[in-house]
Image (tube, rainbow, N blue to C red; front, side):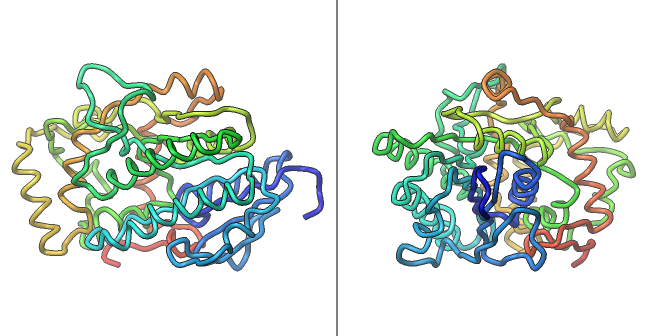
Length: 343
């Protein structure tokens, strides 16, 4: 690539968020080329995209340093959610792999790093208000996902102190959904034994109302726009990303014309633990505990500093997810391959 525009590197380029970020970078006239990094490369890459097959958990030496030479920004998205039963493996990919990326950014003198943190990095929050980016990021330590996201927040603290010349942006998105990620997310969180009727919640007469259950979501394409804006701009620091409305049993009940029925938290937790213990679902009961303790995020800083607003509502994102689950939607990458219920 020999243009005069920017060259951006994206790790985790074949995942839910990565595919959208790479696609949007390829459409942006300010970007001359994108270096997409993933364990498995695409046979037909998007426009203006070079691919590198790299496993951040296994790479040795200065291979990543060399890849980052001449790059104007690194968007670090690589993450492994499963297997949740092997926290050593996820730690190697998520934490040690991310630390390797930080070292490579410094060694290659990359001017900017946009890191995908998460709402899961936040400590449990208040029930009566949303929190801004100053809320503590110690996670819920019993859940590997939250523990790893929180650890990397501390790694970024140290990195920023040692490398003030690097513009560091920490994105903390809520749950991200799009139609093309539905099959992957069903496999990651619900498993192949999930009943097909859950893809048609309008057919369910009631929805479980679990005390403490309220989550924020956004469409993956909206999240990707924020990441691209940060990579190509001048902003620094952390940003919360979420769309309205906040989802709970009552909001979803109205949406799907289903009656919320109170389900005690201990009963719901026991059912989750039993399903996990019987290997009927891949999500751990510790992650269930963490979700019920997530704070609500105030996204005012992203609106004011990045000029970012979600174009789709949280309910629209959920609609796409459910439609994709029903149809077995996916994208032409290994993580996002389409699959129907039972596979």
